[in-house]
Length: 212
Image (cartoon, rainbow, N blue to C red; front, side):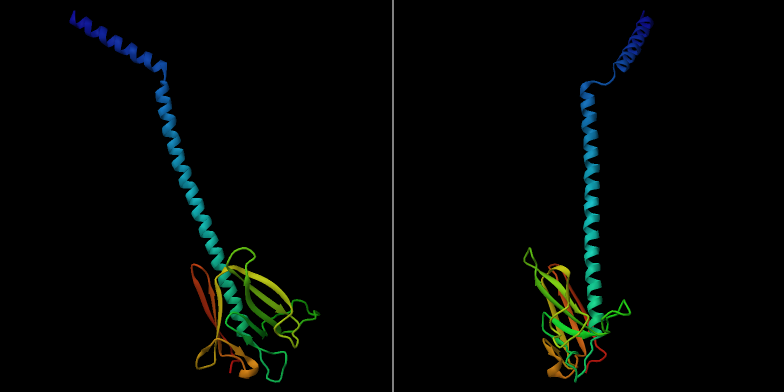
């Protein structure tokens, strides 16, 4: 009788297991599975969104640094090519702490018959941004130099978000905050350029071969 009872229990157990398997998942089990899946998807999405934000932030910073580097390189090249002639009214170099105007030989004519010279008037200065409390860096170029080296030509905005622009002029002994080629009778040996941003400062020195 014990053997028969044991066999009967095993048979009932098999039938119950088969019955439960055919019934599928309960509502509670489905809700738990959905909750776990939702949690996993949320974690994956947040990780993906964070990665995208980090990539975009890094790309924006790299683009900004690239523009700043190119701007300093351009300013350096143009100032290095500064031209001065003591008996000329056109070739003038005038610089202050936040503004500089000079004649440069760095200009290249694209069209052979264009009414342009190899020399051009170039100026760098700042103005307040249209929106915000910071400054914008502007560049001015006049491809037909005249007696008024400080005005004329086309203006181009280069960079926004500046906190300051500073020029320093080296006369061979010390750094000065101003330079007038008429008074100094020549060009400075070097010009220090500083671009100040909220997070960082960028600096370069342009050495002028024709400097006195």
